[in-house]
Length: 157
Image (cartoon, rainbow, N blue to C red; front, side, top):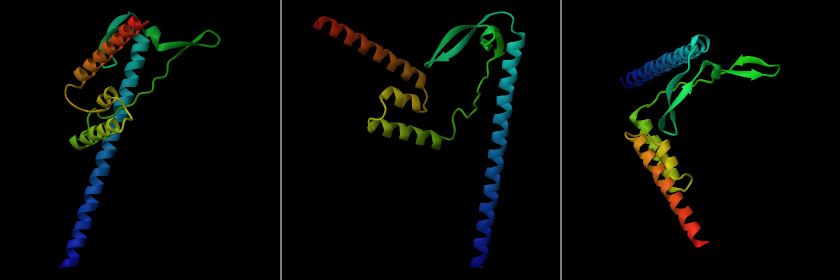
């Protein structure tokens, strides 16, 4: 009877591995399909966008308004010819499992403790609620410290 348990465990493990492979394959196909949809959207914008418009862009963790025009999707090549700009699109899960987020946070904290990165870089690498607010406050604090250093440097001269 002991041998049957080993065979059953091996069979269960094999079925779990097949399930994992199938999940990864489906996930990869979904990411590829989404990337293709994004490329198609860019091509539609390039071809049919006649008017400039204002769009919100995430820049350094802050939402900034920018003006977008279809001419921005082309570049001038040698000979005065305009060619479409090639976009490199990468699709990935925004947040994976709680375990992977925890592991990523722990790695960032270890790098911070080792002096490899500064607190702002550590916060940027970490995954947690309220991250944008923390990054904004860190930037404001760094700006204030820079200004204070400039003023102190100017008074010593």
